[in-house]
Length: 327
Image (tube, rainbow, N blue to C red; front, side, top):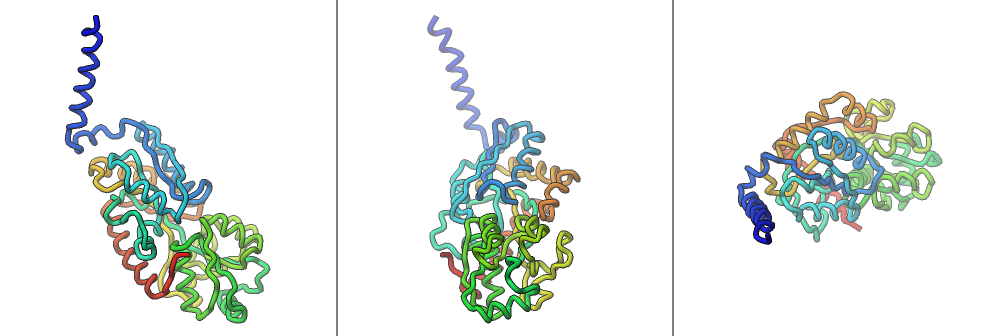
């Protein structure tokens, strides 16, 4: 009886071996066949996390496999970046990443454990959100011009950011340089704690993305002095741009997007890109993301790759010009 029981096991082992020996392109045709994990580099509750969860919910329905979101915060997103870069390139571990991790980190961190250009395959740039120059309402300024005068009269006052090496950090450094003011950079571990401390008055001012700050601006707990893109936001149409105010010569926004480890099979990348773009074209989904303060994007893996390359060079120049360092 023993041989009869062991035969199916041997057949199963042989079948499993054959499947592993198939070319990746053939195995990818059946993708996905098991749950997919999306790594979010920040704590739960922020704009990036919320958008990732919206996509995960829809991808679960569209792909027929559970898509799980796992938060892996730390090192301004670089902890998650290093983790996914070393994951198997099979499409089952993805990174929901942002501008800082993909385009700024290589120029400002000396001990980065991954190379965004080498270690990741872009899938889709999902959405972007501008930054705001914010102050606590107790700060006696209502315009960028008044803010600059106030900062010059009080050198060394704090200007917070969402983290060392973040878009908000570098935007702040370039703004200080353009305005000729000296302010102390205070980095936080994300947008939410920074905003909470500006609201409470622990720090007087900061630069944070619109999605996280919008509820507090609307309620009067924060005052927005300027937006960091050329175009004003429909949510805050009365808030001028830094360029309008004469203190910014480039746009500053934060995009979020999905990437996979390098060498993930092209059919898998295309399956994911097609699915995500299909989701973003649904009005009800686009509306949910827009309500968070984001502009919905979408596009091809090639377009995303090109954008990453262009912005990497841009932020490298900003790092050199501003002299920004990580604390």
